[in-house]
Length: 250
Image 1 (cartoon, rainbow, N blue to C red):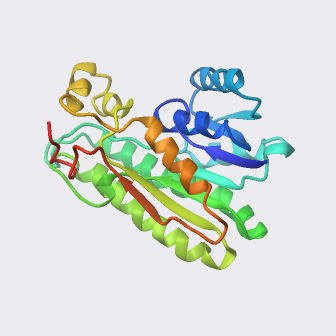
Image 2 (cartoon, rainbow, N blue to C red):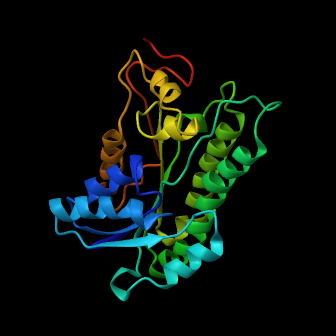
């Protein structure tokens, strides 16, 4: 039974991935910033399966906090074979001349530093064992830029570069590295982007059928079920109605 660590598992993609993998032969370490938000996810998993689950509460932006939490893992969960760097977010659609620098810092610290911190903490044990798999949850914005999304897109461009860099750095140890890059997906993403404004969030998905969190979870399942000699470098998936970040048929 392999051990999987999923960051940002309280909702959205992270929760869906956890629920999907709980149906298979994995044990799960679920990360979030709040045990209160993690607990319902864990209870839902326990109702539907016998998968061992361990909550790990820390903020991916805080290296020392993450390091301390990981060192407290029980022996049964210490060997993390699969790391899913899912925690990430976009904030607002302000142009660079008007944007809030706190939003910039939050996106940079979460989407880039958070991935780096967790990878730095977990990858040495994979190197020691000469096996493992790192999956980074990116975005269609890893490949393009749209008005008002410059910093978010920059963080996701950086993530794709990091994914390729990890693949290069860890190749000699037989460690797989994958990026999954969704297009428009109807989760809590836009609600977070607009600081809880549900009206603005709902408008994003009107007029077409977006991806949902289950679609991304199925992509993760597919990647993890490839034979040992196969690495999926990246999956870029969009709704049928979407061509790119700004062209969507409605």
